[in-house]
Amino acid sequence: MMDERRQEGAANEARNEMEEALNMEESLGLGLGGDAHPGDILEGRVVHISQDGVLVDVGAKSEGIIHLRDLSHRRVERAEDVVQLGDVISVYVLGYEGEEGTLKLSKRRADEEKAWERLEEAQKNDEILEAPVVEVVKGGLVADVGLRGFIPASLIAPGFVHDLEPFLGQTVRVRVVEIDRHKRRAILSRKDVLAEETRAKQEEVWSKIEEGQIWEGTVKSLTDFGAFIDLGGVDGLLHISEMSWSRINHPSEILEVGQPVRVKVIRLKPESGKISLGLRQVEGNPWDRAADHFVEGRIYRGEVVRLATFGVFVQLEPGVDGLVHISQLADYRVGHPSEVVQVGDVIAVKVLEVDPERKRISLSKREADAEGGLSAVYEPEPPEPPPTEDPAPPRMAAYHAGDWEDEIPPDDPEDPQV
Image (cartoon, rainbow, N blue to C red; front, side, top):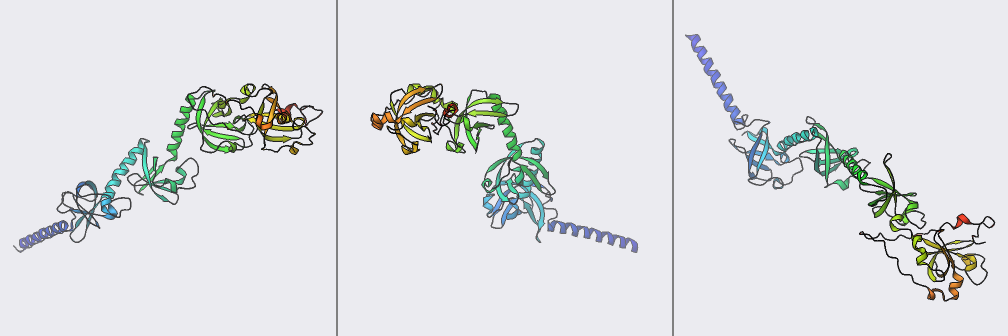
C-alpha cells in the first residue's frame, strides 16, 4: 500500500511539474501566440505607431512589436516613413522579449527573406534588376534590391571609375553575380549589363551601316590625329584630314567633346570593326563652286592667312584660298610680304585667274587697290545649300594653303610664278 501511495504521489508530482512548465512556456511566450514560431513569416496589420516602433496584430494573444531598427534595411528615423496605421505587412517572427513574453517581429527580415528568394530567381534566370544606389562606401556602391546589395567598384563600369559620388541616388541596371545567404552577401554587377547593352547596340549599328551613308553622331574624344565619333554604340574615326576642306592644326579648332555632328561613312572594315568617317564630305567641296563664286576681273574681300617669301595666301571663303604673288602686292618693289600685310589683315584682291581643277586662284592686291580697294569689293550671292530634309551643319572655317608648294619650279624653290 505504501508503495502504491508513493507511486501515485510521484505521478502527481510529475503532472504538476509538467503543468508548471507548460504554464511557464505560455507565460514567457515560447508558444508565441499559439501558431507563431521563431522563423515564421506572417501577415499582420499595423495597429499602433510610436517613436520606438510599431505594434502589429498577427492574430496572436497580444500584438507583436517591431522596433525601428527592424522596420527596414535602410536607416529609419520615423516609423511613419515606412508604414502607416492600417497597413497589412509581412513580418518575420524573431522570438519574444521581456517578462511578459512580448512577440518580437521584424519587417526587415521578412522583406529580406523575400528579397533573397527574388535574387536567387534573378540569378538563375540571368535577369536584369533595377536598383537605386543608396550609399557610397569604400570600394563600391550599395544598391537597394530589397536588401543591401554591393556593387564593387570594378563592376560598376567597363573602365575605371574615379568618382563614385555621382551614382548616389541613381537607379542602375544590375545583374546578380554572387549570393551567400549565410554571410548575408549579395554581389551585383552593372558592368555586365553595360557590356551586353553595348554589344546589342553594336550589332544594330553594323546591321544598318553602309558606305556613303550620312549618320548622326557625337564627338566622344579628340586626339592629335582626329576624333572618335560615337555612332550609337560603335565608334568611328574622323581623321583630321577629313574634317574640313581647310587645313587645320588640331581637331579642337572645329570640334569639342560632346558635340553632335553629321558625318559621312567613307570606309567600313567589319572584320576589324573599323569605321572611317568624313565631315567635310557632308558640306561639299567648296572648290566645286569656286569658278561660279569668283569671276576673273572682279574684286573680292579676303583675309590674309599665311605669308611666304614668294607671296601671300588669302582666304576668300572657308576652304578656298588664293595666292597674291609678291609682285602683285604693291606698285613698288617689295622685299618681303610682311612689308605690306600681316596675317589676319582683311584686304581687297582682284581675281586674275581661276583654276578649280588645280585648286588655284591667282589674285592681285595691287590692281584691286588701284581700282578702289575695299570700296570696290564685289559681294557674291551666298551659295544655295544642297537639297536635304535635315538642316545643313554649320560651316567650319580654318586655314588651308592648297597644293601650291607641290609645283614650285626647281630653279626657284620659293617662287611658284618664276
